[in-house]
Image 1: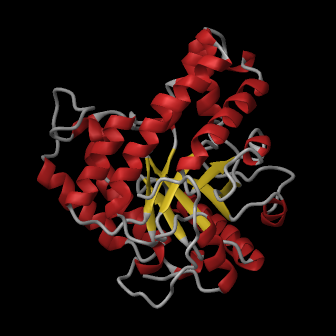
Image 2 (image 1 turned 135 degrees about the vertical axis):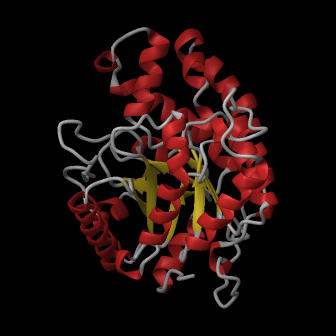
Length: 349
């Protein structure tokens, strides 16, 4: 596997990793998804959710949960005050993309935040930069070619700034509901091909952030499983191995909005399949249920919830990261050793 090649990039990866070189990170860069959670809890339209609610929530999550995380992923639109409240030794990733996509334009094309650059993210304290990309093997060739060029440009910008580039791949298929069985049958191919494509050196990706290669609602034994099962546990693990084999850069898993229990199940599959993943960047699985607590019961109740359920959620994931492999040994080499960082009060996965 290719590894971050410069001293500064390695320093950036060290900053978002724990003392073992495992990325045990918390993601709360959600904007439209978080606004949807608030709208549902409040019983209002999306546009009636004030940005201040998002800021308040991100601040609480950062302050209370980052003592148990190696890093936090935030957005510069609503998350900069939360970044300043993170635990002292917790690293910072900042998102570079606009939330969502223009539904009037085919292909879910990516868009960067207006008024921002990688250099500006660095000046805000980012140790690494994250870009989300919707990717599908079913898209027209010209759409994927545009996405390839887009990622190349962001990779070059991160390389010029000498900061690690995290690429988050969100799999989908044109004209399909991502929650239905039709896409669940296709998802393994989309994930594997996406990992294979963006491991190529021209993109200058340092870490891939990917969903697991199966829809967990269709896997035998999954807490999210319904009546229709498409994959046995053994078949799911084999697909985990195929996706991991396609990766030529270190990779971490994202929770894709599933419950904490379901994401734990996914990590258990990865561990049992002996996947050499380098950690997680987990979002809603850790904190999403607290939104309704804040809306219904207020800030103090949210703090109590985060300090109990939120901390328990993140510790359960950290426990499963004991089997994760450091980003610097993702290719089973040990020629790059990060400086050990002592994390006072941190969980040690």
